[in-house]
Every structure is written in C-alpha cells, then in structure tokens.
Image 1 (cartoon, rainbow, N blue to C red):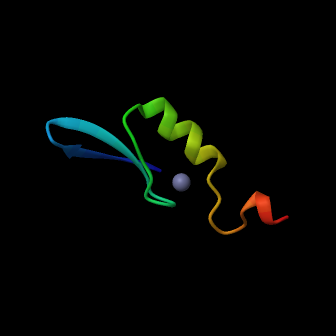
Image 2 (spheres, rainbow, N blue to C red):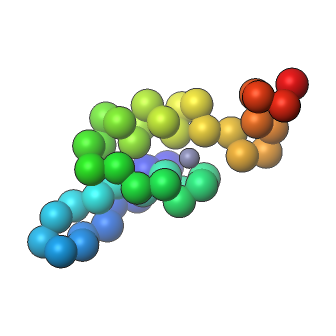
Image 3 (tube, rainbow, N blue to C red):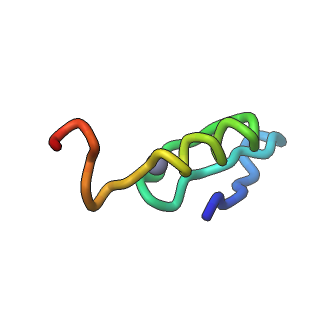
Length: 44
Ligand SMILES: [Zn+2]
C-alpha cells in the first residue's frame, strides 16, 4: 500500500514495501505495482 506522509507542509507518498518517497501519488502507485522486495525481477 501507498502511505501518505506530511512533511514540511507537503504530502509525500511512501511505498510501504521499500520505504521510497514520491511527491506524486500516481508515481508511488506505479512504483508499488512493480516493487517486489521478496523476489526482485532483476535477479531472475
Ligand atoms: Zn517500493
């Protein structure tokens, strides 16, 4: 899930899988669809 975080008066969107922060919600959602910390595709 994408979590929202208030920081310096701005809303950030955090990937709960890896903790990466995004300033655009759609970017965070797109990232999270491809975020797979259990089985990184680049290792396959
Ligand atoms: Zn992620």
